[in-house]
Amino acid sequence: MTARAMMNLRSILIGSAVFRLVLILYGEWQDAHMEVRYTDVDYLVFSDAASLMASGSSPYKRTTYRYSPLLAFLLIPNSFLHRAWGKFIFSASDLLVGYFIYKILKQRKVAEDLCLYSVMVWLLNPFTFTIGTRGNCEPIVCAMILWILICLLNGQIIQAAVWYGLVVHFRIYPIIYALPIIVVLDPRYVQLGKKPLLVNWKSNTQKPSSQSSEEASTRYNLWTAAKSMFSKERILFGLVSGGTFFLCTGLFFHLYKWEFLHEALLYHLTRADPRHNFSIYFYHIYLQYGHQLSLVEKLISFLPQSIVQLVLVSSFAQDLPFCFFLQTVAFVAFNKVITAQYFVWFFCLLPLILPWSDMKLRWEGLSCVGLWMGAQLHWLLWGYLLEFRGQNVFLQLWMASLVFLLANAAVMAVFIRRQRCSPIFLQMKVTDAKGGVKSE
Amino acid sequence: MIERLPSGVFADPFELDHLLHHGAYAAIGVFGDTNLELPSVSSNRSAVEIHMNFKHNTSSGAMSELGIRIDLPLHARYAPLHESGYSEVAFGTPDLLVSCSMEGSSEKRSCLIVPSSDSNRLRTDVVVWKIPCGIMSYTNVVSVVTFATALVSTLVIVLPSVLYSKPR
Picture 1 (cartoon, helix red, strand yellow):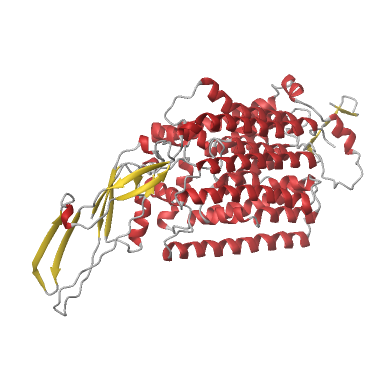
Picture 2 (picture 1 turned 180 degrees about the vertical axis):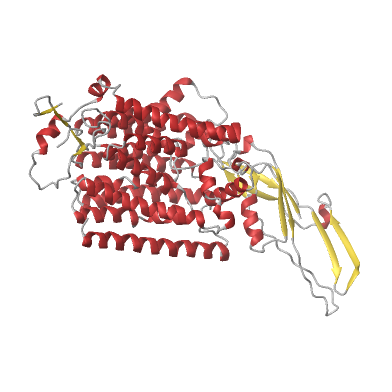
């Protein structure tokens, strides 16, 4: 990393940190002086749960606390240091995500200016800086996901597995990354104790380098992966991540019993909220509320998500950041409940794929942004009429959610069409008995 | 004041706590079903007790009326389905308990309890809140179109994935 590059990254990070500090201070002022709070309601839930934990009680005594006890533990200093402690932690995680983005892109030899632009796509995103400063915990999850990617890029399988088990315990949705991670831990590319060879970035104007003949041989699919499924790297990753997850679950079940299991785990797996949200399913759930859904109906709602996830993994697992990004957008879009905080889950992955996109900001990029934001604003307009004006616009709101899903799908299709899919790993060379080099 | 909330309406105790810290009330408490998430059919009723302090200057000696306004933020639960698209929730009259004391002579106190059944003494209209609700006859159309849209979106994603997944 050159001194000039450090200075630029440093100035971006420092500027972003100062801005977040100002927002946190402003948030404290608004909470104290205005009836409408800046702070997210969820932050108050976390804080209350943390105080309960600090006094030796279960955090689940706080109604609507549906997170891991680890989160309440992190926020215990809210009670004796300052109530904004958690916001500082979340904003610091958000800055860490920016640094991790730079680190990942530099490791893949992306040009300096593109690295910095990508970092700014995260740090200057209004969703990003409001989410941490309002007290939402998603930046911590994003930082953990990116750290897992860094560990995988460095061949640190055990460390990646530990963090992966922890992040699935914390937030469940990263379970969707299990399959592509297992697929990418092919022993031809990742071996225990060895640093894997990475495919370097090249711009769309560069001629193919000598890496390209090796890239062609790295193409594999689920069938190839299935044949070598039981490699020691994959088994180790599965055992360590599964062990970490069950250790955390077991520990907190021992401490907090069925309340923990129900609120932190089962609630999220069975959640079907009839209240309006961005999901296309909300009105269907409301109209059917109280009725037992048939097996066919349950399957139908489960199928689109499953099919999309499987096809994305099968098509893009080798380009792990791009696969993660598409999977996350699809997971959020097809979920039974969608809230705005979920968008951060894929916003942190977007900067990792932009250097490989042929999409220009004008006008393709701006059209995607406009379509996605427009569909969202359209939904919010009907939401406002329902919530604050009390008008019966359920049908229009539901149709707006259909438009939002279609907009998400269309944007995904554009990304797929314009992405220069690039595997992250090169096939490793192995030295034979005579000292020569051969490919495996 | 004790406001007995009808079924389908609730007060958020955390919101009221926030207002209490801003000095909107002297004291406030919510009793009964305080679940913030469940729809009306899965919820029970609740009541809110509000304590307020007022000063009234009668130094002129003339009779005067004291006007008191209490704002209580309420939220509607998701109502049962109805073909009209609205569910009507009627509010009863709150119970009022007033305790007075004269400045300088704490012995002279009088209490006035206003029973809610004595409507002749009250000049209140029935308050009705029309809450939007789902319409049952849309159920089949909504289900079919929801799943059709999910299917179309699946195809919009799956087809390019299969066509453009090869590294370039």
